Image (cartoon, rainbow, N blue to C red; front, side, top):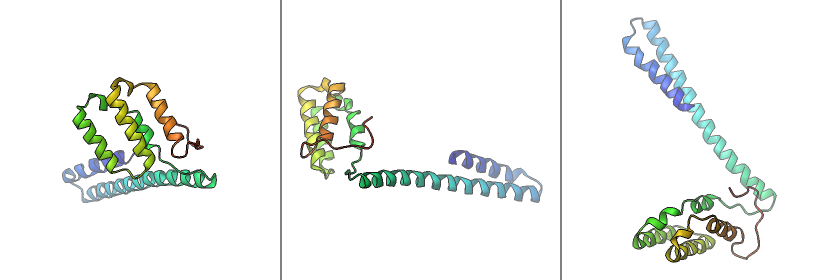
Length: 154
């Protein structure tokens, strides 16, 4: 939606140099300004919606006394096939770099499992079984008890 408003403003501005009437020129500039204001509001509303969605998820987790965990790791599991195609040196370098930037011990354990799976059986990475094992590991992390989740795995 903001793109539509920005394109509308650009079309109004692009016509201004060719307009003879000062009144029509002023009207075109005013329309361009209004379109840019609407684009700004649309961007602000979009960012606000994302923020409110994230905050509401955290509040629901807090109210239900469930620890909040991001599901970005589940997205990572779905994109592991590219690791099998990498050279072992490059793959280990990439996994070392990811491990250095992670603070969670659970995620470090998962990366160690990924490293082991890639080195022993690379074809296993894309399988549904490996993804299920990863989801199982994620839900039974540290103490071995299953965590309740508000949002199901996708």
